[in-house]
Image (cartoon, rainbow, N blue to C red; front, top):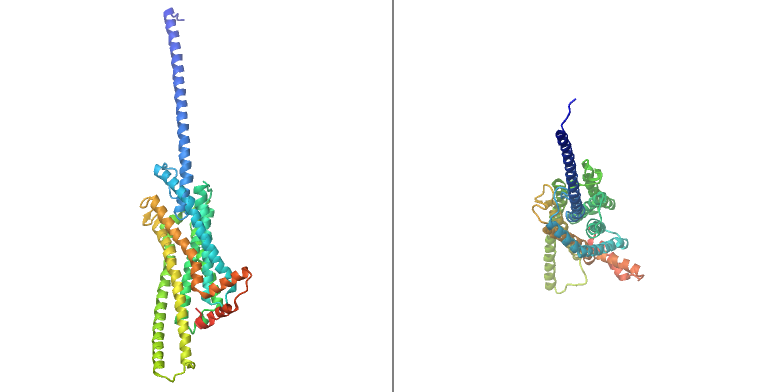
Length: 443
């Protein structure tokens, strides 16, 4: 057994104490660094959570309202929020306080005006021509479109931006967009149907009643409402894990070029065809107008040369000329009225669809937030939407000021509401519009 010297024993004891102190100091500094790191990490985590919450709730909702009420295209987890976006959010919120209520007021005027025309259809004088039936259906489509726009402004813009409402699912927005796009195509197809109806009435007046029957008119109106809806619905269920087949109904295809160019082509082809058809109708009617005016001048010259002419006794040829002349002028008025509707439609919905196909998140000519800034996008989208809303609100004034039958039906409905008797003379005169002025072509 080895006997240690006192000095060595003292040295060993001091070495053990030093090791214990070293271990204690190391453990102390280790726990101190861990606690400081955890505190720093928790503080940074809180800041990141705040930024992520602001980025993932506030900004995509605002951008949703600007990107045609579609899904957001910003990455909410990879890029931090910038000062520019924060300033943009504040400005948009201040603008939305007055812009959205103003838009809703315009759309309410459109709903009241178009709805009044639809309700007054019951008081139209019989027989109701296919042209008037299509006009009433178009007024119903405008009423439906205005209602959907109000719903979109409230759900996609006002509630998220002004009230901070957070959406957990995009299913309601997907259904809203599906009906909105189909409603726009329905209005476009109505104008195309009006053009075809007037084309047959002008070019083939004797065969018009055989080709355009009441049953066929009802079937055409039914197709004008259902086919666009079925087509757009097919896009929303076509791809797996997208649209209505996505768990949260995130319709990412909406922001891509293939869908937008398809809607653009389906919208523009009938619209261009409508303008071409009305060009042909105008050439035909203006040529007939010139012929009748020439004939009228010749008749006046004969009357002035023949002093014994009895003005009260009109020949059958003269009466036939008078009827045909009235028919031509009635057709021209209806054509100019429809062209006014088509031109305003092209300047509103046409520009809306053009913006729709040019600006998107993937594949378009202008990529959102890359080729176009936030403020320019806000200005363009607001301008286009205002044009559409003004168009919807102006249609009832065009109908009532330019089409006597619709104006008379609205008057009779208002008299019925106010419990005033209808003017018998006015009722008799408006009841003759369809038979004397428009028939036998019955545009």
